[in-house]
Length: 121
Length: 291
Ligand SMILES: C[S@@+](CC[C@H](N)C(=O)[O-])C[C@H]1O[C@@H](n2cnc3c(N)ncnc32)[C@H](O)[C@@H]1O
Image (cartoon, each protein chain N blue to C red):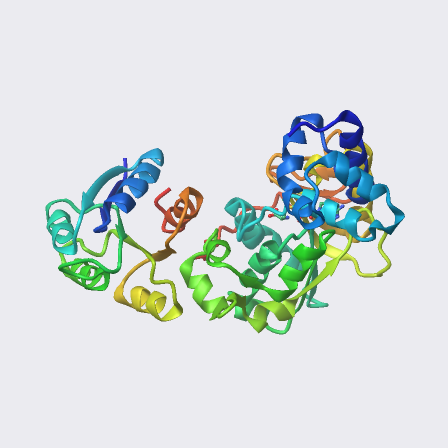
């Protein structure tokens, strides 16, 4: 079973994403800010991270940069999942080390295809 | 919504006459929802009233409007990824070899809807510049729906459409963000021509296609129209051309003019042609994440 960590400060988004991920057979963990997410990764590196952009404590961009410096931190596929939906943000996310990008709002099928694209489904 | 048998038949006959598609009774619930916009525009509230309006010789474009509303234009980028993997790994390399002298490829997306299928193909070519340098790639997309073809010609997609099936790498290399949405690059658009045309119309062009994609179109056709559609497709293909149908669609038992290739789901050839597709799989990975 593949594992996915959802890092998002919105409880609603975490619930919706969890629901989709569980239907795709992922073991899901949640973190409501970037620091908690990093702590989680240090304890157990997930296969995929679904990552919000704007969060308290640490932005999504800061999170990926930090994650990629951790031992084994290159392994997880990182999918940004955000309302920032312009080209500048997308480019910034990719150069920061993200693998895919989903613009909110998204649905089951869109997320499923993005997970396929990073080889996780 | 309750639809009377008579009115249902009139609408179903109109759709079948114009497109070849049958509207079965078990899909009748769709009519009311699909036609809601047409009802609103004409200030009516049910199918019986619509049929009265259609009977008026002055109703003009109303019939076309009704047909448009009943068509299912569902599509997305790289729909059924495995099909595009097969195209990329085996079919296009085989065609590159066969057409090495002319360096010309003609591909037809028959029932192209809003253009995502044709663009997905164009992105494969654009993503392999070394391989296709100097080639003349002509992708033709046709659809009976005027609205769909107009949208395809514009090549501008909403946020929902653009991320449906497309990886972010391809999105940023081949699309530009504009006020109207995500616009396909000129490089892709130059490879494609979109035209409004029914599959059932005989061709007036001498162009012959090396590859035809007709996916998720013939599903709802009646048996006669479907057979006729296969004839039209065959007439416009090279003798050694390939036909790709949608998941679960087949020519078997539906026409004698095509037969399945060995071991390739959804891929068909002219019955008279030799099957050249069971060559060993060269297995070059299908690069799809980055432009
Ligand atoms: C469900 S879409 C499939 C689009 C695309 N081929 C795909 O697989 O994603 C079917 C399309 O076929 C078109 N269509 C239906 N009957 C047709 C006909 N007789 N000639 C041309 N196009 C037709 C519809 O307008 C619609 O856009």
